[in-house]
Length: 110
Image (cartoon, rainbow, N blue to C red; front, side):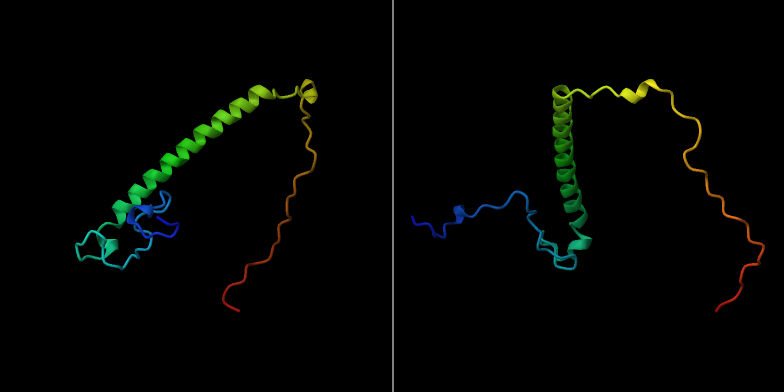
């Protein structure tokens, strides 16, 4: 067939797009129960979506961990030359303490 054929098997759903993305909270539910979506299947769909997102985050975290370990093996950290000196005990900046004001607080509006 041609490039612009209208065969039904040419149309594939995007795996990243949820199947009921265009469904609003107050629309009739997609299961056919004649209830509002928010009262029927919304929580079930949200938990399914949440599970998919959690799985994707777990996979991404595992990949990031592997990449970080690989990078650490390739580039070991340089030794810190300042670590031989003991830390200074004096403060660099004095702490700020505001002075006390002996005036009563305002009461009332205005």
